[in-house]
Image (cartoon, rainbow, N blue to C red):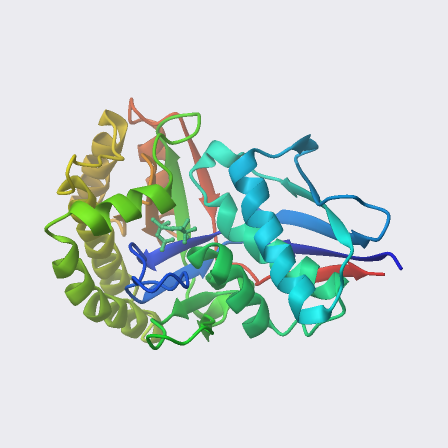
Length: 328
Ligand code: DP6
């Protein structure tokens, strides 16, 4: 019997960063994180379990994906096969409606959409917490894209397998805008999985990061719940800079920034000095994502677009969680 399902999910941006895994090999984070899921950009994925297939196939944007991505997709499908008793191989077709080099994590929307489509196709429970836990086993940040709005991923208990994200406020709770200042086109040199592994292994500052991250995450959560965008921005910027500090201190130092990153960071500080709401966050790449209000967004975007090292800008706002589009 052929069984298929199609799902869509959005990327998310961490306001309190996850960086580093726990040592027990179950893909659980060493620190709690908190993100906002973004509207307007999505990954859409169809999973078809088909007994006629000799092996799993994975097309990304119409072309066969690389070996590493393929391996990660097969692992997720194997988990779903084990849970459902399905033995058929699957055809996975996935596409992003935003460029992968935009600095927005396509693995978060990708694994979240894949988890939901695979559970749906297998006829299993598609409760968002289950989608989140399954996506997290492939990519930790993907756990958060199962839900919309503001989403926290706590640290799990050592030795336990299950860990899902928790929605803390819906998208409309806080009128936030995220302006992405794209500072370089093309893929990043060191992916997050490798970058954080190197940091955990060699950075003398990593223990300090693990110790300080829970309090930063709590500050981000409390600021969101109070709808205090300035306090949120201050804590989010601290979290991003502390995460990068641990990587810069690794041996050899891991520097995701370019000149354009620093220019954009300086512009954010100038905007604040002019009285605008503007706080920066940076993921494992050179782009700067600026948190602001809907009122200040046009001036923040215009100022960032003038920065010589900024190639282009993308404006995003809080959005919904992963959604099943079709099941046959
Ligand atoms: C800097 O979730 O991509 O974006 O769990 O190894 O797949 P894996 O890593 P990933 O790391 C994301 C790191 C980050 C911060 C964040 O999203 O919290």
